[in-house]
Image (cartoon, rainbow over all chains, first blue to last red):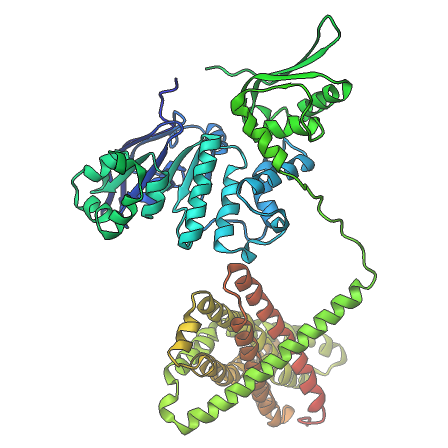
Amino acid sequence: MNVEPVVQVEGLWTVFGDLVVHRDLELSVLRGEVVSLVGGSGSGKTTLLRQMLGLERPRRGSIRVFGVALHRCDPDLFKKIRKRWGVLFQHGALYSALSVFDNIALPLRELHAFDEDFIRDIVMLKLDAVGIEHRHASTMPSDLSGGMIKRVALARALVLEPELVFLDEPTAGLDPDRSEAFVKLIRDLHVKLNFTVVMATHDLDTLVSVSDRIAVLADQKVVVCGPLNEVVQHDHPFIRSFFLGERGLRALSAAPALQTS
Amino acid sequence: MLVRDPVVQATVTGNGARTVELSGAWDIRALESRARALQVTLQDEARASEAHWDLSRIERFDHIGAMLVWRAWGRCRPVRLQLKREHEIFFGACEQSTGIAASPAKRFDPLLLVISLGRGAWAATGHALEILELFGQLLIDAVAVTRQPLLRPWREFSAGVYRIGAQALGITALVGFLIGVVLSYLSAEQLRLVGADVFIVNILGIGIIRELGPVICSVLVAGRSGSAITAQLGVMRVTEELDALSVMGISNTLRLILPKVAAIAVALPLLVLWTSGIALVGGAVSAKIELGMSFLQFFAGLPAAVPEVNLWLGVGKGVVFGVLIALIACHFGLRIQPNTESLAAGTTRSVVTSITAVIVADAILAVIFSDVGWS
C-alpha cells in the first residue's frame, strides 16, 4: 500500500575534523518494521540517530523522514514532523524538575488542545501501558530506579501516539531481568500500536528478540542490512566477532529465526 | 491516501432508533485542533438518549481519540456499539485504566508555620553538629599529620593557596579599591560640613582594617572558592571518586578537606591584608581629590589613628572566616547526593550559608572585642 520508506538516508557523509565517520551511507526503514543499528563503538550509531532526529547536521547527503528532507525543509514543517515521532534517550532524559506525571503530560500540554482532566486520563493510560503504578505519578525522577526511568521515558515518548519511535540503547544500564522485561514491553507495544522503530543498540539479546532487520555499521557505511539470518551469513570481521563470538552464539541459539532456517 | 476530518453524525431511522456515526480520522493529529469542540458534541450526543454507536467508519484511531469518546460515554461502553476489530485494543486500554484518582487537594494547616519553623531549626542544628564533627575530625587528622610528616598533603595545600589566594588577587583588589573610594567619598562629604577633614584617616583606617576588609574579602572568597569546593566535592561524589578514595584506604578528610581548610586559613588572612591595603589606597585617592589631603599626610596619620591591634584583629578574622567558609563548603559538598539537582541545590546552600555565617561571626566578634583597639 504505502511503499515509501518512513526513514530514508541517502549518500550521507559525517566528518569530525579529519575523521570520516560515515562515507556515502545508505539506509531505509519501511513502515511498521523494527530496524536495529549495530556497530562497534565509534562506528557512529548514535551520531546517525541524532542526525535522523535533526539534532546534528550531516556534512553531505540527505535524510528523509516521512518523505521530508529534514535538513532542508522549513521550520514549521519540521515542527510538525517532530510531533509524529517519539524518542527514548539512553539515560531517559526525564526533566529532573518535573514529576513523573508532569514529564508525561508536558508534550500534551504543549499542544494546548486538551483540558487538564483529559490530559490526566491520557497520562494514566500511558502509565498503565508501560506498567507503572499510578501511585508513582507524583514521584520525582531522581527517586526512580533505572528501569522505571526507562519506562517513564518510554511513556513520554509514546504520549503523542508517534508513528515512528527512536530508541537509543534501550536496555543499556538495566540488569538482564529488567532488560528482558523492557524488551518484551517494547515488542508488545509495537505489535499493538504498529509504530516503526529505529533502534541503536549493542545488546545482542535485545537485537535478536525485537529486530525485523539489522543494519550493521562498519567501515563508515552500512555493510549489510537484513534479517538476522541474512546478516550472520555476511562475511565481515565485525559480524564474525560480534555475532559469532561465544556471547553471540549463545544469544543466537535462542533466536527462533535461525533455528528454522 | 487522503484522510477525512473527524465527523460526528447522528441519524434517526424510521422506528425512532438513533444512530451516532463517527467517521474520518480520530487520531491526535486530526484532533489536535478540534478536541474541545468534538468533546462537547460527543457529550451532547451521549447525553441525548440511548443510541447505537457506529465507529466502524473511523479511518485512523488512537488512544487520544478513544479516550475522547470513552469520556463522553461516561467511562463505560454503550450497549450497542459497532467497532473495527483492530480498534478494539484502544478501548481495552481505556477500560483497564481504572482508578483515575484526582490529585489530592492541598489542605491548609494552621500549624504549618510552626512545623516548618521547627523543621528548619532542627535541620540547622543537625548541620551545625555535623560541621562541628567535621572540624573535630580535621583536628585529629592534623595531629596525625604532624606525627607522620610523610602524610602531609603539601601539593594539595599549595595548589589550594594558589587557587584560593593568588588567583583572587585581581578581583579582591578591584572590589577593595572601589569600596575604599566610595567610603572615602561619602565620609568626606560629611566631614567637610563640620570641618573635621583629618578624621577621614580614622574612619577609613578603623572601618576598613577592622571590619570591611575582612568581611568583603570573605564574602568574595565564599562566593568564589566556597562554591568551587562544594561543586568539586559534589562532582567527586557523583562520579564516585570519593568512594574510590575510601576503598583505597585514603582518608577523604585528610587528603581532600584538610588541605583545603588549611589553604583557606592561610590564604584568606593574606587576602584580607591585601584587600584592606588596596581599599586604603582607594580611600587615599578619593581623599586627595575630595579634601586635597596628600598621600603622605594620609598614610603618616594612619599609625596614630589605628592602633596595631586592629591589624591583628583583621588578620584573625580572616583565619576564622576562612575556616568557617571551608568547613561549610566541605560539609555541603560531602552531603551532595549523586544527582544533578542535588549538586545545584548544595552549591547554592553552601554559598548562602557561608556568607551568612561570616556575617554572624563578624557580629559576635565585634561584641567580644568591643573594647579593644581604640586609640
